[in-house]
Image (tube, rainbow, N blue to C red; front, side):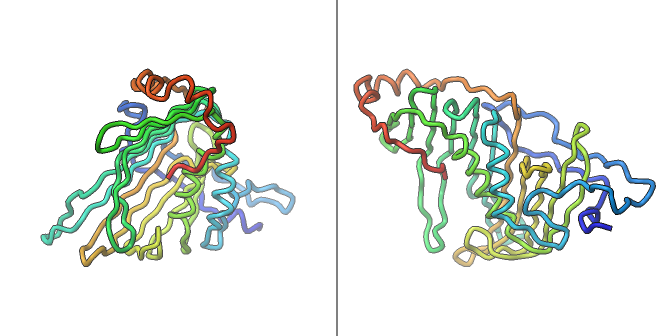
Length: 292
């Protein structure tokens, strides 16, 4: 029997994702994997088993770079809403945890040069100290890309000619795939969502995540056959400056193929701040960078 048929066929349920997308509206019921039909007879040598997603094997390991590359290829040119959340909790000393930080980000894509991207203010752990990054929003209307940065003294605005950033926006989630799925001891099972095949990839244990040692690590992802990582969630504990710290991360895609983008409330202010002349003379060689 072909090694690829070793994928476990069974009932797999993705826990309800608590992410809220699209301006606060709940994204609806969590996707639930239902069992794929179990063959009544063993496949013959000529049978063509369903291939696993790129980078996913039955040998207990994943090639995160191959899966991340396939993910970018799968989402490029699609419309969608992508939302992520990362919570940082610290131990209270009595066996409980208290939330120290809660960071969110949302990307809404209509097409490559029409999108809206937002990231809340965040605290960044450098390995030695804590740093701060301001809240940022980007809006591209197909002609101009506006950036709003919430500084301590108020909002700052910038404008550049719009570019097709579909691939760049896909890299945001692809970077998370590489960070959180770079582990061994991976198990893969297969099921269906609305009649379409999905793979549930999960791992537990420990390892290095985002440059720090992760203990009690647990990660799960829902992946389509072409490598589109629709959902990803991970939890682990580490120690920072002698304090036990728990990280909870999750992202989810919604409205795939049916995404839309509406202008932000701050657009008139941004246009007034940058001026027509500034927008017209913005560097025509402006290139997009992967949002972090």
